Image 1: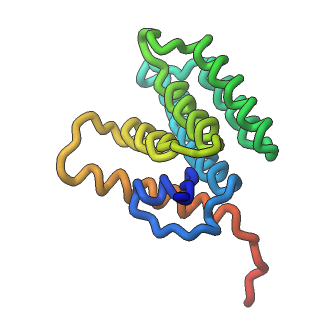
Image 2: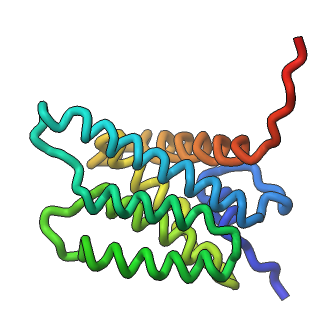
Image 3: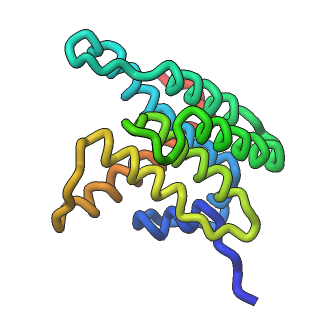
Length: 178
């Protein structure tokens, strides 16, 4: 019988990150998605701050979706988290259907993050959603619309940095020595 890979191992393979079996934990997946959701929240905040200049204010629905995503990420029970992610996907499809025009990119990126949780927690896991969510956010954040031979490496490097941030966020804080 072949060992089943989990979402962190799948992500690590996708981005060239050194994986150890002890990393395959729900809290690491949740921390990674939390870092990504934080990136989206920063983009929304920037859009709101410069809306007078651009004429492009973020939607109130994107604020609600981000708030619900934060609540989802605060759940610790595995099954309740899956259930809440299904509920959040349903809400997202109500406020921003797939065929909506124009697309609310902030909500669309949160939906990618919710997919990383929802499908990453399935057993057996066959989800590449964590890597896809990171790629989606990276593309929007840096305005990437075309790829050349350098962009895959740049995207993977950025995603590795986000995974490192997520793992470090889980490390206990020790007092500094003077």
